[in-house]
Image 1 (tube, rainbow, N blue to C red):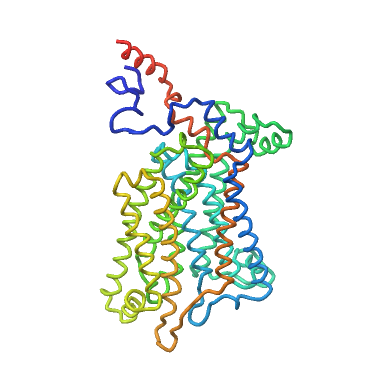
Image 2 (tube, rainbow, N blue to C red):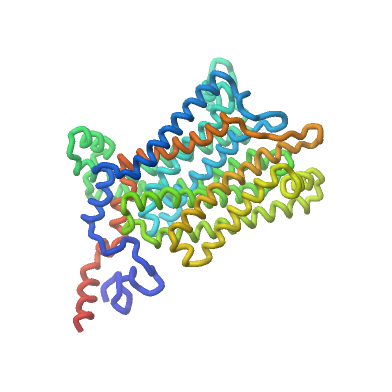
Length: 477
């Protein structure tokens, strides 16, 4: 019996219980995959791309306008007050950092665990990570007021002898997020190199050939190059894996290390990490389902990919629901009057109760429909639930940040927070920037990893031809 087949003479990808649905439909050839994915970059963009890009570019322009207005006027145009010094700016920062988590999870952790279904969605999720972190960095950068002084956060010698407070979790954010972004960029770029060489060899104009050739770093696809590539990719995946846990844990320390009621809890690090993976996968589905429709990628982004991501959303959503309930239990079990008061004002009778119930419905109740296979196979249901999760994760950050600091230790220091039009337009503009960057990525770079998708096809198995002959012989009998 040839290696790579089961004892029944069936290829492992077709064995019962191994993979009920292939990762690439209709037994597509290597050349078809290359033509299909490269065609997205080489051909004119469909009308759907323009319908998405033009509004996104307009919103991105609104973001630039609000940032110029903010710098010229001051952060007083935001709705922050005493005691709510952190408003939508930090809410949006934590939201976007969470969105960026699924990219590293799909690319690094699923690669290390040899999950082949990651191959059709890992490239887009990695790009999503980079763009989400870019959007996240805008808000704390401008929150300081004089954003041109942000470079003082870096521990470099300066003439003013100003050194950072390394005990501050806010400074930990700087190191954690910058490290995460740097490693993610390198990981994303290394994975792109073989596909950039493919685009270089197919380029029809001299400029495109020079541009793709420059970034392909002289890739020729030799055996030695593949060995170095696979080793570098493996090492970067191993380096990226702890970052998934560390980055959002560090972000949670901004709150957990304080003494503010509603923040001072040890459940925040795992709670934030599970929520980030939860929201990140929802954003991957939000992006890839329209992309699948616009470019006709049904054979490459199959229902197996969507089903697996829906299951992960169900799992992490259940973990997040457990964290919500434990947070309520901790506030009561601690017998801390301030924690109990914060709980009552947040959940039962406070002005932000509506936000808490929106959060709980979107993040805990709505994903429960994924217990049913028919719901996971219905693309409209999957897309709607994914957007519910996106909204719910934003409400979660809103519930954590402004509602906790609005109820201080003394009733005389209580105050309500409401965002101004500048904050609302900045948030909408960050979505415009994120979508614009992602659509530009679709336009100029392959959205699916060509080499990796080919690697999971049966044709890539060294014993594929032996298996094929054996199967055809059994059929003839």
